[in-house]
Structures are given as structure tokens and as C-alpha cells.
Length: 120
Image (cartoon, rainbow, N blue to C red):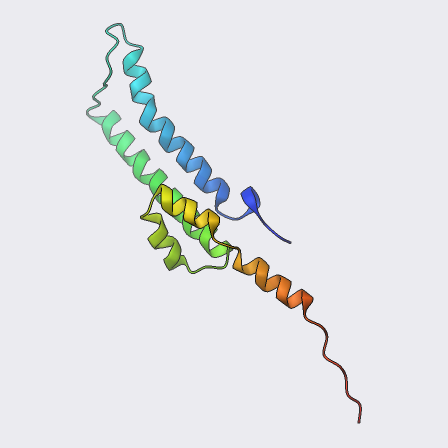
């Protein structure tokens, strides 16, 4: 079973958390712009600010776990995923461009010829 693209473990988790982070970042701007004063900034304080901060941290952790899972599903060490994660978008592009080590290993195993049997 060759898993590529979105069927690879961690891919959907990364996309979902990145989409939710983007919505959480852009949402307050739209809320502020829709007010009668048409402000460009909305300052949250109290519980809404705490809720947004906690949501951002949880989504970042989910993205990080998805990044590590995606990296290990390609056959690389989770440490490589850890360091590429700090590259943010360029690290994500580098992870996508890395060749799949598990697929190349699987091809080598299936293309190997069976050893000749010697009877004595």
C-alpha cells in the first residue's frame, strides 16, 4: 500500500490545523471591520483573549505533531521533522520535496530477484 499525498499520515492534520490557525488569525480583522466604526484592529481582553491564545497553542501543537508524523511516514527521522518545523513555510516545502525513502526501499525489496536454490 503506497500512501502519498493526503493519504499519508499527518497530512490532513497539518492542513486542518493550518486552516484553523489562518481563520483564527484573520477572524478578528473581519469582526473589527464589520463593526459600525469600521476599525482595522480588534483588541481582545479577558476570556476571549485567553481563549484565542489557548486555541493558537493547541493548533500549533497539532500542526507540530502532524509535521513529525508526516516526516516519519516518508522514512525520515522525527528529529529532521523537528528542525524543519522551525523553518516554518520553507521547512514545509523542503519536507514536501524530500523523496520518499520508504517507497524506494519497498521498490528495492520487490525488484530483488529470488536467490537460486542449490541442491546437493
